[in-house]
Length: 282
Length: 314
Image 1 (cartoon, rainbow over the protein chains, first blue to last red):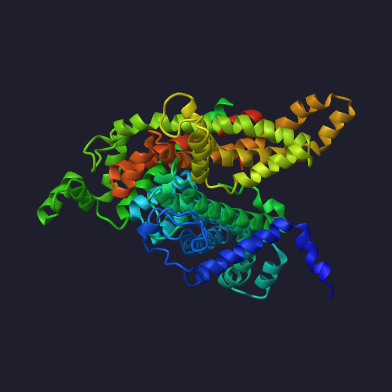
Image 2: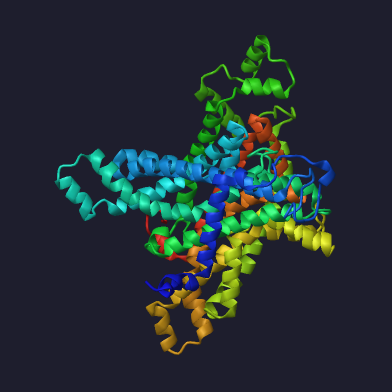
């Protein structure tokens, strides 16, 4: 096998390749973060506060003398982990509830979709704020809040996909083979729906990351001193005049991460039926 | 058209009732006890007796449906109760902070449309050439940039370094520029991209090619045949963006010290100040739903097919 054909797609889609690299780095940081960094991300060292980048602190130190790069790397676990769990919850709720509505039809469908409609009258961030008002702040509550403010959108999309698949041959074949309704639902319909939904979910990962950090920035999500990117920006806000780089780095990290997932999501969507994505957006 | 508007208005009633039910029930079914929160925020030690008194006073000893109906009934008369933390009526305070928030949101929406529509048309006209590439780059950055980070970057450049614009507060038109850009950037990027795609799709359709073949001037074809149809997805998306903006404004307010409902709401959420959380959420939902009603009416005005079919627009 020659090298050129395998490299050709990379040359054609440098952005996608870069995004893939970025995501790989993020995943590595999330998995091994604390082991990778030379400094304790929460170690306060006041004599060395607000230092410019040098060989010891590649991105400098913050207002408490903590190493910025270490905090960024360790913070990846919170940001990425939070989004991963949130997404898993949303997919579970969306698939379960939306799949049930689409497959059962009739009154079940009516009731579920009316409830979903009500949830969709809330702007998502407002609903997430409301949920935090109910549950309180903190990492776990942010995950629940964001999941509960997005499930209805995914349920509706899932229902649409299920409805569009109801009369496909492989389902009729399973039915003729005598499979029970539950078995058809669990073994045939859900996996087929899931693969399509995952693509949509990838497109939304960036959006969720912005939600998580936005809530933390407001002081309603992950709490200081946990190294999380939104928390870091909030911590640094009083230094916008004297040390703007404290805000710059965590924001840039967040920005590049969101961008990488958006590029990946776009690429996945382009390979999928484009009509699926119509009407998706919030 | 009048029948369409009337039908949409009637549909609002069950929607808002549903939303109010969600707001009320979820807070009540949540993990914490409003009477405890009331005592905590009024700084009264939570003795069993004080707790029982608070429960009676707040009506928490009544069946939950009765409580909901009371809350809704009084709310319809403009009484959303008294803030636990501030010991002041909720509605006057909310109405005091709301205009600044709505001003920012409305200007951000206007800015979104004012920039994204020309940008989308421009990109579609010059497909794959440099105007299109610029619009593509803006869209690419716009969907990924955190609005609160963008706000700080703008402050650093235009207030700290250049000293052109105020970094904080609400004093005159100059103080609006940075917050409006921060709120609007993502929506305008998406909208421009959407309009471009939609225009190119319509431009490939037969009626447009026929109009060009008839020898009509291209600009006129663009205006009368392309834009008229290409508008429709943009109108729908704008309804979505209004929701994003209502949320975005709250975040941006905190950066620019904008005196809107943001700080009032955030401190209520931190304090679990139930009457404020309920009233704030309901108010945001009402604003969002009304904005979407206007969007739907505009859609129906732009697309006669919607008015005639009895079904909901998809």
